[in-house]
Amino acid sequence: MPVITEIEDLKRIYKRRVPKMFYDYAETGSWSEQTFRENSSDFDRLYFRQRVAVDMTHRSTASTLVGEEVAMPVAIAPVGLLGMQSADGEIKAAQAAETFGIPFTLSTLSICSIEDVAAKTSKPFWFQVYTLKDDDFMTRLLARAKAAGCETIVITLDLQLQGQRHKDLKNGLSAPPKPTLATMLNLATKIPWGLEMLGTPRRTFGNVVGHAKGVTDPRSLTSWTGQAFDQALDWDRVAELRRMWDGKVIVKGIMDAEDAAKAINAGADAIVVSNHGGRQLDGALSSIRALEPVVEAVGDKVEVHLDSGIRSGQDILKALALGAKGVMIGRAMVYGLGAMGKKGVSEALRVLQRELEYTMALSGRTSIAAIDRDILHVPKGFSGDWDR
Image (cartoon, rainbow, N blue to C red; front, side):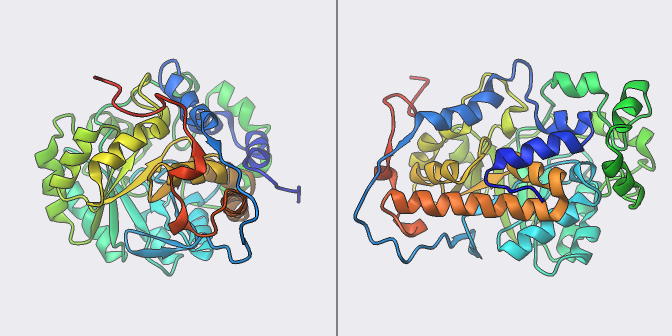
């Protein structure tokens, strides 16, 4: 096994091992990909204040997220198609998260179904839902999540329609891959991945096929996804979904203080500052630059989490210093999953925790509760009221 010391080590292995269309699916943003790039690069504009002669012998990254005790303030973000990055990918990632002691969020558009993941794990996981037009499907989907033991749902609000992702369109992204010449030539170079896939029956969207009306195979699924998302979504609809669920509700996709207030009014228990990893509105602010105004507007009413751009434990610490209660990781986890399956996800989490713990200590903090803005040098104009 190669020595893994940083997330980039996993990314290099991932790129070699996984078919191009699924690597590109993870490593793409919409249109010019400006927001996709700045989600990560804007973290580099924040500098730590090095502190010395601080007793750092009793360090801990333990914290809580929406009332759950966690080994570090990190949750695995909802990512579609994990089962195409590695066979039974959602199960592997959920098991790694459970062992490590952080929440795993299952996407509605996962390959493994809610029931698949519940059967292979022993603790409740979070479940992500989109706002879809089919009320009957939505009702049954939430009932399935409740029956599987889920206590928390994550409502994604920023996908009423899909931002154009050039790579996905050019690659003909599908699950399972369509047998085009270009795809077959690429798959011929990914033999270990292909052999793993032959060993599982799970190769399409397990939460949808056989559950949504008229969706019985990949062809009917394509038609369904083209018209399923509710473009008429408004805050009344969000409040309605809140009433449909008697557990905790996290609202994801908030980038504006006014929307944060509306999410709270709609009944959110927590909100996630997120631009969908730069995959929706290109040209939007990076999530880390949008974070502070949302935190200031929310105060202590609900928890604020951050998603998009996290590639290191130092990024996690910077988000916490600017007011986030926790973060969600997507791509950093995908790199590990695609590189080494369950073990790779565990490696990614180990790397992130070690970087977080050591950087905390060298910044003069030994607990998550002690982290504040004073550990950073923040450039003037980095975040604030951009519109006025």
